[in-house]
Length: 89
Image (cartoon, rainbow, N blue to C red):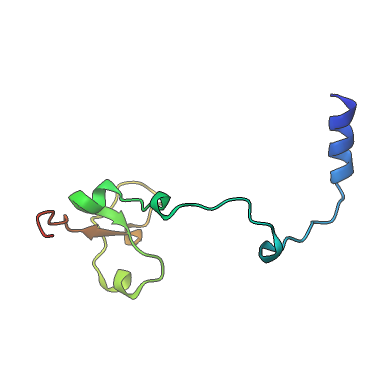
């Protein structure tokens, strides 16, 4: 190990955390709105078993997906989604 790495590791081991205030930070760039994205899972398009929303009233009233054969995975964590009708504009 080089001396610089050793000093950096030992010097930071007991240091107090540095508070960060994002509102006071200097802006270094801007993201164009065209680069915003949304993740679409294939099961949301084709239909099938998908994760149920956390602590949602809809998830509590919807029937759980078919029972899983995987031990340790609760079937209530999933819900069945119908396929999306892609011709509906």
